Length: 109
Image 1 (cartoon, rainbow, N blue to C red):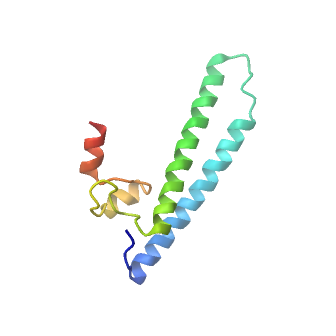
Image 2: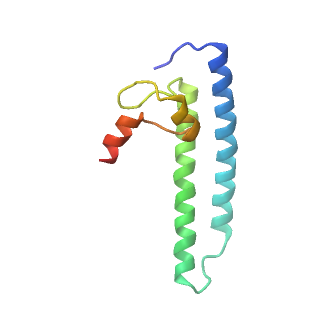
Image 3: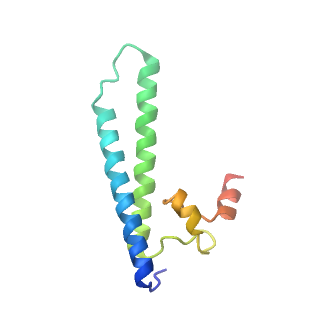
């Protein structure tokens, strides 16, 4: 669902997009560094730790990419379940949030 937005909202979205893009670059660099590090240290715990860090970076990259896609589509800031506006305070803390708090709580069970 695309909605016409005013200049203030356009500026805010540009700031969010810039921050998400910077975070995407940082996470991509982190993932590249993790995959370049040899996991063959002889310590199975270290190998598992590297795999977990790489997996976490991949999840973050997917979340950021999804938020950037929603900005481009004009649906950023709307709950994907109930279509209500996600509060700005929530988006400031979690810019890749896909759901409003009540819907997220229901998803978490």
